Image 1: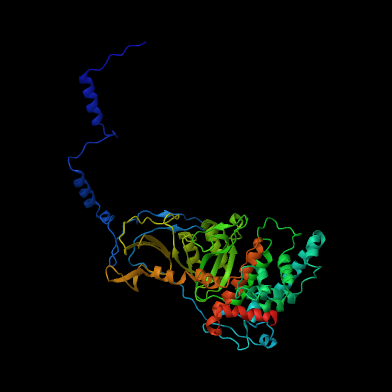
Image 2 (image 1 turned 90 degrees about the vertical axis):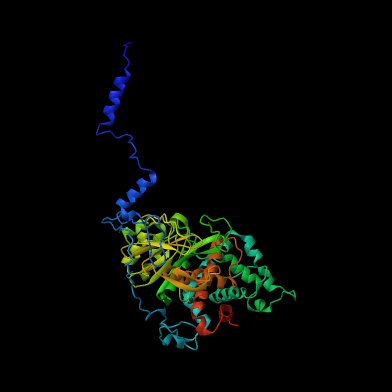
Length: 523
């Protein structure tokens, strides 16, 4: 073992002095003799642009931290975008102006019981005009046409044939029933709509002979056993055909048929919105959803595109998890995720037409806003602060204050109410307006950003329509999810169209149901 002589105190001191004099030394440095506050004040005086970092923006002179040098880049030739968020008080939105000339109901002729209607042509635009001899049944048949009813009748009879060959008890129990006709299918739909006006606890009570429960009209229209027989065999597809993993194959024809009809009979006005709706179902289903904010909480979720002015359902997508049927229009749409692809799928027929769409924070992202703007569509909505490519808005705001950043045609705004609210818009500037409400504590007018006021006025179309329809819900408790979903489609077709024409027909929704029931049952 080798022996090493220890260093003396003088040698150690010389080594230490040489280390601190070395220009390449990257260790601890000595204090300058100034206090921490003096050093911070000197640093701010050398960089005055950073003095405003921790201040809060007031209403008259917004003040935010300067993040101009930090550019968030996600741009390449494949279709992604570049964002350079900065504070620009002179920023103004590039708004696309919409022409409402051809908006409204696009009906070249109503194919109803009155053949004279088919010879007349009219278009419903800003002022909705109606023929005096058009009925609610005519509008119902715009969606559930004879072609659709005949298809359902054929599938019901096919299901009946299957039961007849494989279930002898079913045939005996129903006393050797016969095939269903188109007239019976219309009567069946009419009774289903009529039941929403005369609610009972159980279906068989509609045919009860008890004086306290008796409703003779149901017995007069259709026998009880015949109604239950049609309800039992109600079917919408051929089970023998391959479905290729389609979770909605039981209703695929009906879904595609109604989606096309919704697009054909109505052209939206300027403002549209996308939101979720929930059809109650608590049975076993792979794509059943739980949304605590909805009234039913459990059920099948629908993404719905609605016209803000009338509440009409323009299109919908049934959510089935990862297999949800969304079609990216272009390769760059893959960058916006599944939620963004829901928007582009529903808005596909209405892009490049200068519409304005309102979205909540589940769909919105900076990339989606620019994608819609490139397709001549204004957008506005809430957004999550942790979305990719969002600017940093770290200021601590007091109630009523806001801060914002802009990049190209997009504006991101943070406004403090009871909590911080983040908005993204390509339609509004950062100005605030009065809500015509008075603060109880201060006695002053309540001010909100224009984008938030506009969003609150137009975003609730789906929820408001569901609320109005809930009083005449036609969905009954059922173990088969596709039957329950089918009856919900009847309300989205007829009832939402009734909402759009309600003020002109002078009929309430409940009266529309009675009119359709009367027409389909020939009462």
